[in-house]
Image (cartoon, rainbow, N blue to C red; front, side, top):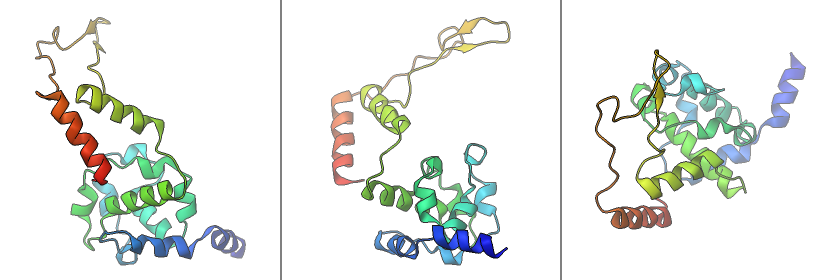
Amino acid sequence: MWADVTVLSEKASVELVRRLNYFPSNVNVFACLQCGKCTSGCTVMVLMENFPHKVVDMVRLGLVPELLKSDVIWACTQCQKCRDACPQKVNPSEVFIVLRNISIIGGGSVPDTYTSMLSKVLEYGFIQDAIEIVGSDSLTYDRLKLGLSQLNGPKDMDTFQANCMDAFQRGA
């Protein structure tokens, strides 16, 4: 048992936990009761290697370096369901944002999937191109074959792109 505590303490970083307070957020990971309500409402819980309440617990334990090495901090979609479910108002989604910021400030990089998605948004106004699906009859269907209207991007793409770039430059 003591060996586990030693390994845990070697991985812990109190300084990185303190850095959470430098960000303009309302994050108090020490208020977390570990009730799991945030996880039960999480949209991407099944895709994450750590559930929101476990990520908060890892931060409380000082295991921020472990989280910064993991892709789990990029899995959160910011749907805010965890914030709404938390009886202590810990707001795990904000914890994910702060961890992402710490990662980037520390020299980490945004995963390729995010930069690809951003490129698609700037180019088309959507995070991905319209896709075709294969039906149970093994035929391929697009929106037109399914009787759905075509997806249209922003009406004024130039203004949309300019507004996006402005928001990125302001850090919004």
